[in-house]
Image 1 (tube, rainbow, N blue to C red):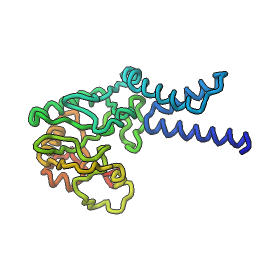
Image 2 (cartoon, rainbow, N blue to C red):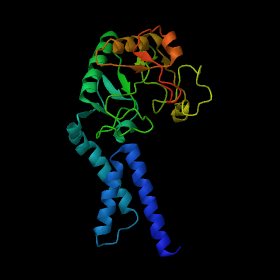
Image 3 (tube, rainbow, N blue to C red):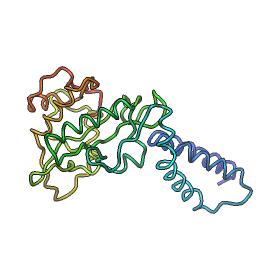
Image 4 (cartoon, rainbow, N blue to C red):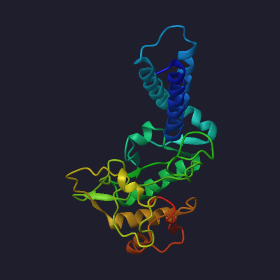
Length: 255
């Protein structure tokens, strides 16, 4: 391949990597760009393995040692990683910096979690995608509405042998309580999360209808909670009638 063509292809590849890392993690593209600039300025020849190793090292360091402190400038806080009341359903949420919320939502989550645990002492709130650490208006792909730190996805309540457990999906997404789609049959985006489930084999946990309904009732009773997205048939089956609980529409991924 001619050197000019190779240079162009390599740069296009780097641009694609930066865009993907930025869209998925917000800070990954910045870390990668800094390393590319460093490589270009450095007079020494970098071996092929140096860039990816440095990227992962700097990215991990930034994620856990720098970003949580810088996020407060934007009124964002990172949700707990391991805590009695609130914890992530999947560690990738933390690793990809998708567990940041506005300070108001941070307080709200703990207040709801404490109320829920007062009724179910062994329960935890398992959160999924929330928001990025910086900049209002920067969407958390594929959740276009998660762009201000005030939205969060929560897992339904499951139980096993009488104890509250995480849902059976490795990611927290894609495992539906019921396959009914009612008004959105055939809409690709609506059912897209079914491909992100990676159901764990031999999982025996079952959906806890009563505890899930109680959790939603606690949330709708909180003054700072404005709306909750839930499938219409689940709203009926759980016996919930509050106006805050509504359908997100067929244009959005199923909630």
